[in-house]
Length: 192
Image 1: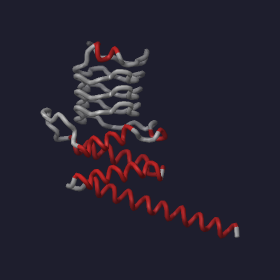
Image 2: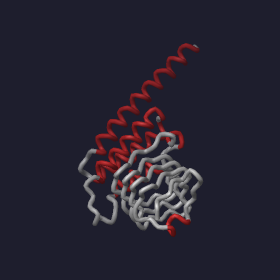
Image 3: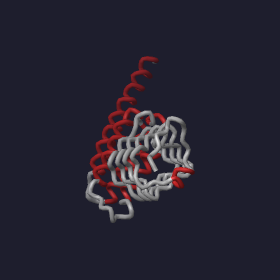
Image 4: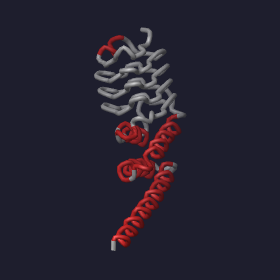
């Protein structure tokens, strides 16, 4: 009887892994769609996979990061609002499970002007050269983040954790923006 129960559990585990793999493939397909509704469904399905199957965590994170990079690469400076699907994907990335926070997000050189990321978990994120003009980063965890050369013009950093962050060469920020942020002796501040 014990052997039968073990085999049944083994079959259920394999069936669950197969089902998760199919959902991951489907999410990737949806994210590549030309239709906004399908891309939003792809982000939602990707986020659900984080909570359902930890073995897909890193792959989901990389897929959503690549989606954001691809969808923002041709944004013009004049565009004041992020596309809805990008904003939803960034929100999901900012809430990623704690288990995956040791692996830094790579959103270097991404055009994220106007992003709303309050309380986002972005510790260690690679945001070098990112366009974060007007970003709402209130109480965001940017500890250990790489923000070299990032455009922080009018970004709201009140309460943001910048301990150990590298902001050398960050553009457009002033002392009033940084005054409300939290830093430490390892924070590399921009020259103001």
